[in-house]
Every structure is written in structure tokens, then in C-alpha cells.
Length: 371
Image 1 (cartoon, helix red, strand yellow):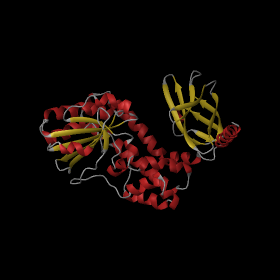
Image 2: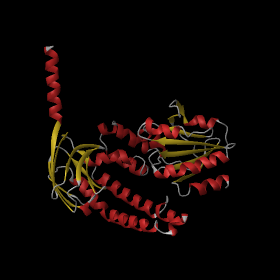
Image 3: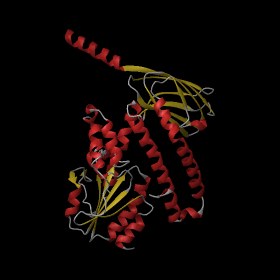
Image 4: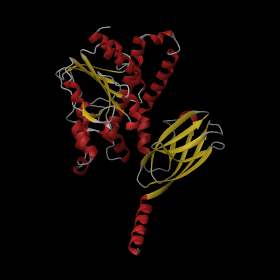
């Protein structure tokens, strides 16, 4: 019993050694006195208080190692947020409402400066994005927005919004390569294994130490440096999935059904464009039962979230669940990071065509299968 007590004390001392406390004093202008200020770790609130005369103090237990947290403010049902890359520090935060999310001033941190540096580099593009959002919102109130060509121009795969996103990512890529030994940079690496090309992945991998190359993220970048998006004539890459009853199966099972074509739909249950595309997909699957097999590979946080969609499966339109797909090697090999993305294969599993988004989905299916 005494030995167990000693072990318990040692464990408690270890936990205390790795735990720290963050103290935040924030001066926030432009908000009402009913605004609630949260500090989030992931999606979990670890501290919150009501803003009083533009001031709030938050205290929470955090790791001694720097991590990403979110300051999240709800004011008159409107959200405002900014990312903090901090540790167990005492911080002074100053911001007006219009400074969120990218121009919030954070003092007292040994770590957040890197996040601020990236914000500054991307700021001109963020401002362009804000202007574009206003323009799109105004257009959506007019009949002109119903024109598919107008939508494609702004939010299509090669539209203004997509090009702006690519520019932001390229700034991020340069930041990663030029600030590689910074802890914040390493938080960005898991989100960029499908965002670029072999040259970038190899450059990142080459900057890693021998020990870093043996980590999970190191191995992912090595795989990414040998992977590329499928082009016409390439074979499909098999994916381990769960069917509507959560039984294990393979994507290759659907190529064995003898149909002339297999449409692989990489979607997400939480993606509005994916959900917008589902009725279109079903319509063409129902009209082409003799020659078309559709497999919607759905990404979601858990199987429970997926179950509703799995029940929509029909004989030739399977909605399957790829558990934790974005963390798999297969996800890296496909190099597809948009949902929905559609990959049309022939019966031999060779790629015929690919497209992304809901806007041109109908048009593409009509091109291959008629109206």
C-alpha cells in the first residue's frame, strides 16, 4: 500500500511538472458588455468570462510546451476569433472588434511572434479575400448569381476564390521553409501534406534531422515527395472503408461489380458542397444503373456522424465511411484536398476525368452520360 502511495505521489509530481498556467489580460474595444470571451483548446472551452467595460482576465491550466489556442468571442450572436500560439505565459492582448482575426496584438509570449509574422505576410491577401466576400455577398442578392458561369468565376475550382487560396498557401509554404526550426511551423506541417507538389514536400523532408525523419510527420512528407495527383490513365489507389453497416471492405470491391464506369466521390459529411452534390450524384446513378457504379467515400469525425448518410446507399450508389481518412497514407497518395472531388474511372480502374466542387458536377456528368 505504501509503495502505491509513493507511486501516486511521483505521478502527481510528474503531472505538476508538465502543467502550467496561462494568464490573459485583454483590452477589447467595440464589443458590448454582454460579450462572452472564451479560451478554447481545440473545440473545448478551458476558460471564459463576460467582457466588462472592454476588459477581461482569463486563467487556465495549460501545457508548458507551446500549443495553438483560440480566443473566441460571442457578441450579439456574432463570432469573433483569433489563434494564439502560446504556452504557460502571462499575456496582454489588445484589439478592436475589426482587428479580428489577423491583427490582434499579443504581448508577453515567447512563441506567438511566429504566428504574427505569418499573419503579416498574408495580410494583403486576407484583405483581398474580405473584399471578395463582400462582392460575392452582394452578387448573391441579384439574379446574376444564378448564372453558373458567374458562380464558377468566383467560387469554382479555378475561380477567383480558389486562386486567392492558392496564393495564401504559397505564402505559407515559403514561411515554412524559411522558418523551419520554429515550433509554430511544425504545427502547420500536418495540414500541408496534400496542398503542394513533390518539390515542396522534398524540400521540407530534406530540412528534417535524422530523428525528425523517423517521426510520423517525417514519414508522411517522404511519402508525399513520392506521390502526385492522378492524371488521365492512372490507376485508382485502393482505400480501406466501412460500408453502411460499418463492415470493413475495400474501394476495389466496387471495381469488381462489372460496370463500365466507377465514379469515386471524395466527400465530407460536413461540407456544404458535398451535400449539394449528393442529389445530383444520385440522379445520375439511378439513370445509369447498367453502366455506372458510384462510391462516395465520406470523411467525418466519427462513425456516428456518418450513419445517417450510409443509410442513403443504393445498389449502385454506395456511401461508405473512410475512418480518419485525412490521417492515412492513402490520403497523402491521392493528393486531393478539396471536397467534393470526383474521379471517374473505366472498368479497368484507369482515370478518365476528374473535377471538384458542386458547380460543375451536373455539367461533367452530362458530358459523360448525357442529360
